[in-house]
Image (cartoon, rainbow, N blue to C red):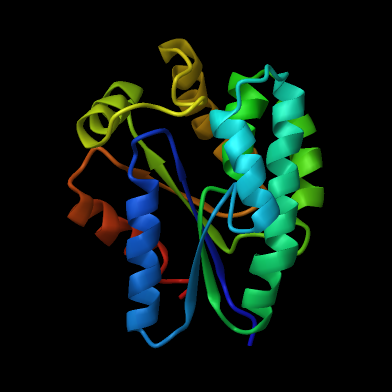
Amino acid sequence: MRGLIIAVEGVEGAGKSTLAEAIARRVEEQGHPAVLLRDPGGTALGEKIRAILLKGEDPRSPVAEAFLFMAARRQLVDERILPAVEAGETVVLDRFLLSSLAYQGVAGGVGMDAVLEMGRIAVGDAAPDITILLDLPIEEGFRRISAGRSGTDKIEGRGAEYHKAVREGFLLSRRRYPWPVATIDAARPFKEVLAAALEALVDVL
């Protein structure tokens, strides 16, 4: 039996990684094998691209940035995601294609149509069964980041207007996304966010 693909998305500081880890644990508690992966990353090539994207100093255009994300994503699909789901494992993703629509498509000005066209090739047969979108005002997201760790990466360090556009991009892109999206208010306590996410997953788990 083919496994499931669950993606967790949202603005900076929304709690994506924490939620993705919690979902993977819950899947395993129910007796199903789970694989937790981050996008970009999860492969040797993907981690190198991630370092370029988040720490590199070289300037890049939004289109070039979009292609870098897609290259890392396609490698993740071929090397990790598809083998896992074909083995019957549930894959939980910390970010996926919806992020590219919000960050590069809307905030970066590449356009949703162009990013979707690239994304269909990058995603291939690894379409997510459901995407959990964590919505949060960017001010609260960066308050959480400041409280939790020092320093920001290259994308987190972009200005407030960019990140406001990212949030709007997520809310716009979910309507154009070809796969199911469940939006959750991430300003609530994490226990409530997790409960809402698990409720959204009832029909697919």
